[in-house]
Image (cartoon, rainbow, N blue to C red; front, side, top):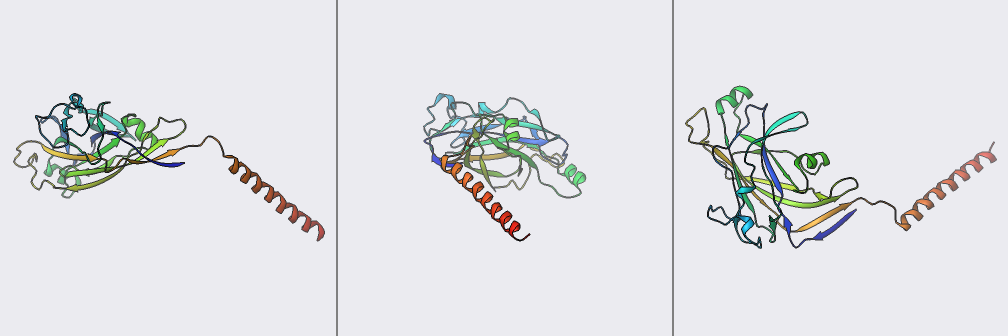
Length: 252
């Protein structure tokens, strides 16, 4: 059942960047430079987000990043994962107020060329999910998907809102993620097969363009008019069968 509505505010989603450990030509996540996160513009001097009222003020949300790179398994594939987990105070009260987040990686273009028989650019997998669920649950429910992205680009993510309220599952958002890449790093400072000046970065700008949402619900029963229509359909079917049997009897 489809029920559109508008919300006065929304929690920010959780998100993660992931590296397939068996794909040797992918970007390699690193904590040599610490990941960053800001609501609004990037500025290290901004107050922590748990110290502001989240009514449109800019703030620093770096502490929501995992402190380490973890292993994550999905569909017989193992990933290195660095996740940013939204907390209860991470509320978005104004549309188009982005989270700007950065994570860092290394890359070896010569190894990527040798392993893939072609020139490859660094890539990572990206997941965005409702913080009411774990990433594992969200993938199992089909509420999120791993999307392959250009790790050397600035990625703008607009989130469409579909709230799923289905029997046997926790209610949660299935974000419809529209990704627009721009501002690609033409020279990789992190290339291990060239002059290495330090880690490269993937930059994410995540926002809700509006707070309009669709709510998908599962009905537990039929309305009275639906019951009447179903009964009528069966009666019509029996009537047609009766006519056919009568016609057959008359012509035997």
